[in-house]
Length: 463
Image 1 (cartoon, rainbow, N blue to C red):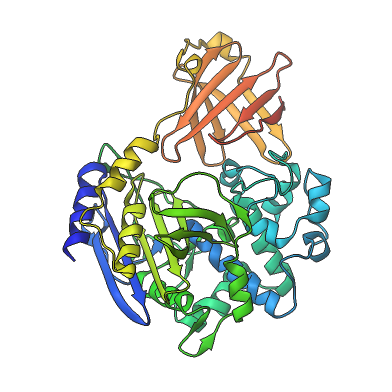
Image 2: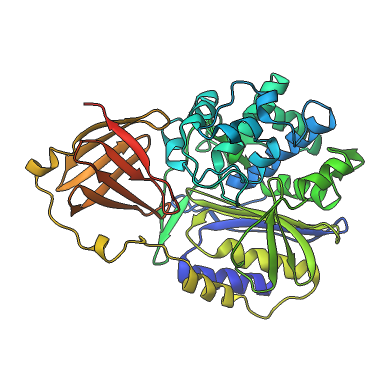
């Protein structure tokens, strides 16, 4: 397809792009199915239809599909308080603790903001990760607004485990993968180095560089599935057909409708001006695109961007994944596939690249004050060097290294610049996260651990 080749070339010219997969289906027919580029740049290994890609948060829809199946079976409902289903569940906001439901977890309205950094510390023990939710301070009122929150999806997956006695990974394979004939591999359980898998890449000024694969199985229910193009085609055919494929129904019509019913409004504009009225359903975002209801979700993790979606009134669906971040590829290719489905292709999609350049900041969001670094000498650094403890986050350690304060925590090895008066800022390039640390006169620490963190986390000095 000439337009696709042109769009990929435009993306590569400005942002670099190792490789990718994409597919669109409508009324049971394949409109487009393509692999492009390299799965492994260093080995010059091409992408094919069996190459595994990490689909990141597109895994959330698999978690809600399993939960919806359990609702069909009477093991839970979307509106039963989680506390009744899982008595050990705890939150800092006690009203929320008593009233939060699986629906609240699945549509991101629990009042918590992101605490993703903590997931680099608790990587293997899912029960422990869920237990630590009890120590996350609320950023907003319960059910006040949409606030994307990965750990609540871990808790939802863990709830499914508690109700069935099987792991999330077993549930996905037995209830989705095997019936649909999909290949499934899981982060922290399966290795990708010895498989036909896409390797993860980042880009800077269009130049590709290899990045580490995200590891650890604890948080898989929010984004830990590897699969390939042939398998994604099976998944989206089922979605386009309302939960049924080849005469086999995965979930009831009522249950499927529940998965894509809007629950909470998402503020802000979409990447495309013709996509309006965004809301979050259950593992899916709903909107209206060029007058057509659309359901979709993106996924992003180290080295991978993915997008899966469908038009419920058109019996049509699409999926894509690329093994390069940070680029506008997954939005450009998404809307190209959508327009192919709607038979309304534009001549050029570079306007989405330009919109990305205008609206996306890949650098730190420092204030003018935070750009004024001062030297940090070893003698002064002694006041800050040490170990700090929070019951949810565990232990963080700061050391003095190469004239900076360096944070060692989980998979993080993060330098911080000194602003004076016990204040530090740091920026992590791959996740484009800005960190802020404020050491008090009493020796304790307050930290904001992501760009969108609206509530600082308190750490007590441990030594």
